[in-house]
Image (tube, rainbow, N blue to C red; front, top):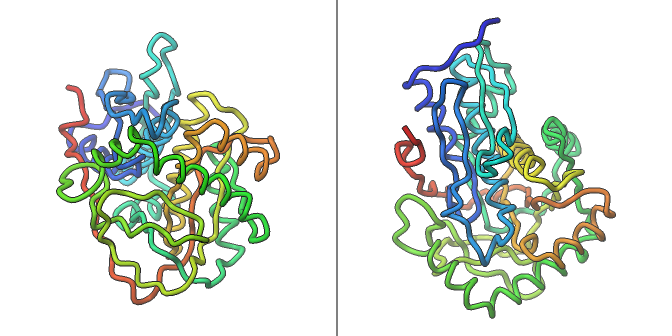
Length: 322
């Protein structure tokens, strides 16, 4: 099998998949650069959120999700990919170089690529209907392909997650820098990035595990019952930039697999930007055996819930350096 490089049209199609990846506050903090050796991915640190993500962990994870989306987009065009992760120690913003060869996609790649067009972040409450164990195994299997692991949080252990989540939400509610950042990246009038009001429900009531609140939320939550979501913690054995990038790929695979199974999902990272809260989750839920990179709410949307609108995306031309 000989090496080859996709043409401009194929690259643009694949990048159209990549820009649909989930990212912290929908900042889409990535840049792509075509090169003779392959398509290069860079972190766009101008889009870092200092108050939300002071260590750039969520930024790198977001780029990893975009990398996975790109690879699936290329797969639909009969391109197989391999990746050099963090190839330039002198340039930490250079996260990956993607190499391509001609090869037909697998059924799993086709299924996940189709889910890219359907996936939405659903921050509303979910039904209390159980998730079959086989579905959880499918999600865990996809994550393990990228060197990560999933811990399902059983109901008796939910207080161990709720504590750091509430602590983070309380601290952020009084943090002026954080609130200003939320105001800059959410609310009405978002056209190409950020979290629009129409995609954010009102803050949770006291007693529920909080999810991140955004400015001027208008999304109606039809559920009149406590949230029935299952919580998953995605962790990695290491915590360097490469591990965080791979975690982003793993999270992307998890979210897309859940979508193909008909499940609703919402990515949550609020307490992980705080060293103390992150360590508490690592100790209480992962027993100091892995580093938590994200939490994912998974469940069934209410049957009468309105379809979620798409969140805005930057055009491909704005994320490519020619």
